Amino acid sequence: MGQKYKLLLEHAKSNKGHYQNVIALIDEDRDSLDELLEAGYTEKEAFKTFYLLNGELLSKLTNINNI
Image (cartoon, rainbow, N blue to C red; front, side, top):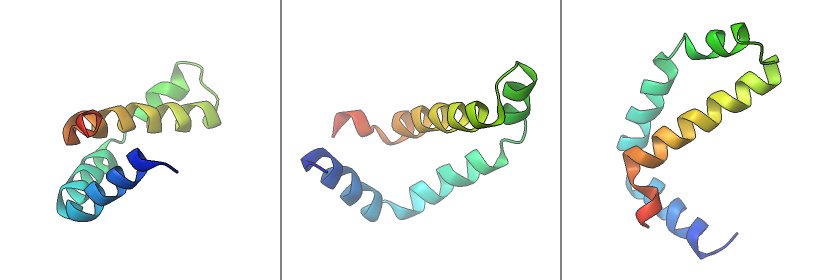
């Protein structure tokens, strides 16, 4: 990967507890995936969209864009 990936990896390694807390929050979300499926997404599309949405959340919570 590149330099930005290395910085992101170092950020994750040095902030393990924070990432674990964010993952726990995402794991608590039981409704979003069902709502995406009900909206007509295929299962594959729903999972990918769910991860994209939560990736955006994670990015905002960790200020990754500022690295």
